[in-house]
Structures are given as C-alpha cells and as structure tokens.
Length: 397
Ligand SMILES: [Zn+2]
Ligand SMILES: [Zn+2]
Image (cartoon, rainbow, N blue to C red; front, side):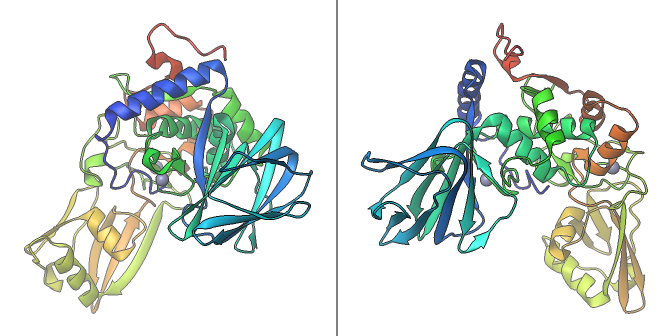
C-alpha cells in the first residue's frame, strides 16, 4: 500500500514502452511470464528448495543438467562468493548460478529461508539462484496470471467479494505492465515486497484465481491511452487525496474524490495523543526553514484534505508530518490540550487513488469492477492490454 511513494514517474518511458510491447507480444502468443525476486527484503544465506508438484531439472552455470526426484529437497548455501548445491541423491557441487526448471503443467515448489518455513506458501514456474553481495538472489519466473492472482490475494486486505477481487486484479495487472522495467538492471522485473507489489506465491483462494482469470489481460488506461499509476490505500477517511499532496506530480485521474462508501469502516478514523514539545519539535524539524509554532497557536482543523499544516510561522506538508510521526494518515486535525497535542485523523494510508475499504463496500452494494475503478480514478477506461498496439486484439487469448 506504500506503493508509488517517491517514485520517479517520468523516467524510463522508452524502456517501459519497449518492455510493455515485448510482454504484450508474449501475452498474445500465450507464454507471458514475469521475473519476480523473492524474499527481496531479506538477505538469505541458505535456502531449501522442495518440489511440491511436477518434475524439476537443475541447470548449472556451465550447462550441466541434473534431474530431481519428486519431493527431493535441494539445499543452497553461500560458498566463497559462489553457491553450494546439495540434493540428497546427488553429489554436491559449486556453481555461480543454478536454474531449476519445471516441466509440464502445474509445477509447484516451496522454499525454506534460513531455517524458516513458510507454511501454506508455494510458487509456480522456474526459479534461479545467484550469489550477490553476500546474499542469495532468488528469482522466480512465473506465468503472469499466477503472479496477478497472488498479488491480488496478498494486497487485497480483508475484502472477500468477487467484484472487489476483480478490481484488485485489474490494478495489480496495470501496475505490473507499467513497472516491468523497475528492476531490469538487477536481472528481474519486480520484487516481491511493497517497493513493487507484495507477492507471497500463488493464490490459495479459488475465488481470487477466478477473479484474475475473469479479468484476463484487462488494465486501466488514462484518457491519453497510457497505463495509469494505480495507487491505492486502505481507507481514505471520506475523501481521497490529490496525488500532488503526497508525491511531486499531479495526475488527472488521481484527484480528490469524495467517498461516501468507507464511512464507519474499520480504518475510517484514528486518534493519537503526543506531548506538546514533541509536536513543536517535529514541526520545526520538518519545516524547510526551521520555523516552529507556539503551542497556543498550534491548533489546526482539517475539514477537507489540505496540502500543508500552517500555524504560527510554520508551514509543513501534512504528508511530511505523517511520515515523521508514523501516523496512520495525513488527514488529521491538531488540538492542543494542556501539555499534550491530540491528533484526530481519518483514513489509513497515503489516501491517493482507490480506497480499499470503500471499494469493498461498493462491491457489496452491487457495483461491478469497472464502476468501482471509474469512481476512484476519474476519466480512465478499462481495456485489454493488447489495445496498446493499434489493430491487435488479444482478448481471445
Ligand atoms: Zn521493487
Ligand atoms: Zn474511502
């Protein structure tokens, strides 16, 4: 949900277009895959790979091929700048990289990282292990729609309605196609944490896999036929935030939307009390000119979302105050009370784009995913990704 914060939106447009075109062509031919770095927020020193379903074959850096027996685990550890591999029925070996390729349909594997097992999580497709700067880089090459369903489940929060899952699947797919170049220099497309999109492996919920399949290929375009930046957050507190309140540049489809749907849902409001001197110090440190505010003049009511807190001589973006204090949202009012300051806020997350808890309510009221998307991203259209190439239609894929 932190996705997109601090993003360089303008960079790499050409690469992005090329990457998207290549993917679209692959998508049309039916073999589209995405490379995702797994456990990107950790630095694994040892990994155990186990086949859950299907057959896998190992290929070493020098081209040697080794077949694995069903269910046979492979232990991978760091070894003098390379990697050491050991399967139970085979002699161990050292290699600079190894690819484990599944053959046939339905190949699945599990991973144990530094002794930690991830019960209930499994991944599809191929996997490679490469040593890099004291850690093992794990890259999963998997079918795009497995990835989309997995992200939909991981990012979907506690929504359970099929129309809500369809909405999240279209968002996940739009983000993927517009960020295929995010890690190209690192040898993969996307990482599996909030820097890109959260991916815990294939979706365990049948309803999520169905929602991904039913929206196959569908993505969100802006009025200029470019993929949008599909920002979303947990709860907007009744009003979404213009993008420029949080990031540098505005977008016509990321503007203020008054949301009647999330009112009263779980993350709609919050309150936090902090010492008055902490508030004063935080404002002074966040103000670009080091200006501060006396406690008597610190009060500020934010009835509708505003870009900046202005009190005394200070003026500080609300999103900076949110980050400095780790607050649930930037949509809050300030009430000095004796030696304390009471912050009363609404919403959870950056507030830009789609409000998940509002979208869940819309889904339960009978709105379909196209209407939900059009409500939170004004002026967009939902189309097949193949529509980026004039005259080509991949909807029959
Ligand atoms: Zn990433
Ligand atoms: Zn909302």
